[in-house]
Length: 143
Image (cartoon, rainbow, N blue to C red; front, side, top):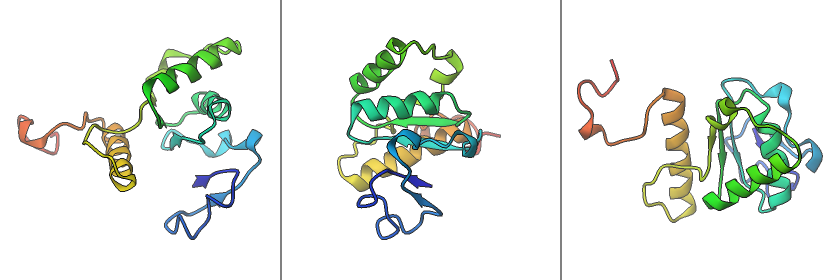
């Protein structure tokens, strides 16, 4: 699913591989009923207030992975804003939060950044750290 309240940016022309491209109102960007323990989410709306709202709602779901694009200080500010609103974020929710999102592969292009994010998601879902396979002791398959 690709979810963005702006149809200009989220459409099937730009996201051809998406099963669903949705444009709910800003206040309903997160459909908690549709998010399961197998779901992943990446947040970036270029609007700190909106991203804080979305992050607050995502942290209350069972999503396996919640990533936040942008600098670490941005994620910290959003968590501060959420706490200031009176919401206590459980520790197990924070363990599912990755901000800044992605593995450090030296990515600078949009394609490289996307690869970095997808690699981190794959590592998290597989219970791995994303390190170099040549440094792994034993089987590369974790057996």
